[in-house]
Image (tube, rainbow, N blue to C red):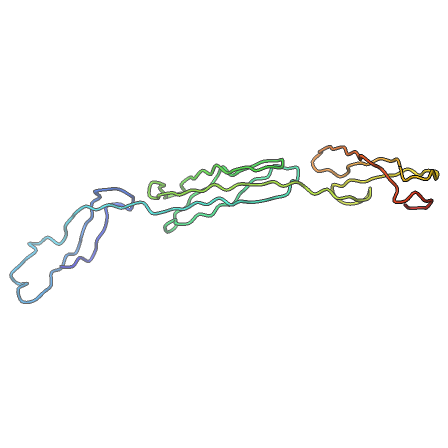
Length: 193
């Protein structure tokens, strides 16, 4: 015997779900005439639909500090069936240098039941690394440390005086810088030393 259709009662995960064999047709040799279906062409039984695997993997993203709140917004979703969808939220987020772990949350999209999936989830993280200050001139671009030395009269040593400043910091940040030593390259008279 063969059936032209075999269907579960619903598409969703469950145990002891009704399965219908429809359009039953008998075939065989001459002994087929010894049997009849008695007008019935379908039968039911039960079986289970088990959850499909769904894997959600958060990305590990590294960005440079930029004085704004930054968010890790990347995750890979594998295993969705057909046009079913999920939305991922609760990514790691932070403003300052550091590591911000995801606490990923999964929400079912339209016509999707999360109970139809065995979900394996791995959180990622956002890492914010320090902005590299440059050493430059007063008019240079970006955050930088600049110095200004004072002229002096020759005195047979390399000691110098002057000041340093931190310019162009991001987002209204403020820093001060000091130098433990200030020296000329040589003790000799010269310009632009």
